[in-house]
Length: 368
Ligand SMILES: Nc1ncnc2c1ncn2[C@@H]1O[C@H](COP(=O)(O)OP(=O)(O)OP(=O)(O)O)[C@@H](O)[C@H]1O
Image (cartoon, rainbow, N blue to C red; front, top):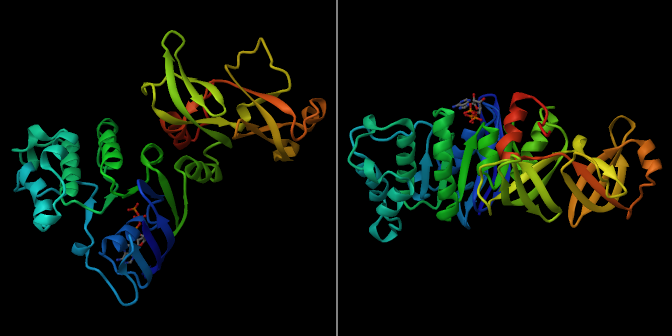
């Protein structure tokens, strides 16, 4: 657990952060100049915050009287452009991280890391003979070889084109899931954050604020900027594919779902997004409609909506779903708390696959 409560001024800029960060990958997400790099520099010990404290797993790294220097923090750092030593081979670059550690503290095994990152065949090469993606995999390996207690990744993919990014993302997922080392990951990229992060810290002009579930946090940011419609996130697991129909089936606590065809394998856990505006509310199990998804539940709450409409919160087997109806529908359907209802909507998107990509382009969700 990393606990941060810091205030730091540099020039006109002031960083303010009060955060508790847990296991897994925490993305630091925000506009350019909003303070992400400054924050990880304080964690790395490259900047000493003027006020406040940083505590990692109970050890004080920085406060009014203590300041642990960077090399005693056992942090692995991966930068945007890799920063491999050009005169050393891949093997020597990997060993470099390890050499900084006393033998007794070396936990990582070179073969395991090389095979995890698929760099075993590159060990004899120098960085000038590697592609951009290979360099970044070696940089990840070098950081891991130092048996870090915490990994800091500062936009590690931003120098790569989208095809290379897609190649490296699974390796970062393997590190996140296989090493038990918490990761702070700086990114501007909504898709990257949505795919990788277990939690997100958003930055707004130096104020590091929300720590929350990634899709909800990103959705709040994007909805505030008008780039994403209001909607519901549902946790689901892929259960099958229908090639001929171009559909994927998933199960969720709310009920079965049909998604647009995805290449994720059966068993993969996903979050899907259902825009509020796509949901139709019915009081009978309607037939003869093209909407493929039907969830049933009970009205839990009725509140004010936008433009004179009414917002319904429906409990679908524990999953809250928000829908909107007009006041006339509310009357005609005699909707009230406790009433059983059916929610109908068309195929839905997996949040990390399509939704945020569209949101970045400023278009509406593409549910069909
Ligand atoms: N040494 C410094 N002296 C004065 N101001 C600085 C210094 N270093 C950075 N800043 C300012 O602090 C602010 C935060 O910078 P920081 O690099 O943390 O932002 P960032 O969110 O990481 O941005 P980017 O995504 O562009 O890397 C910026 O306004 C920057 O100009």
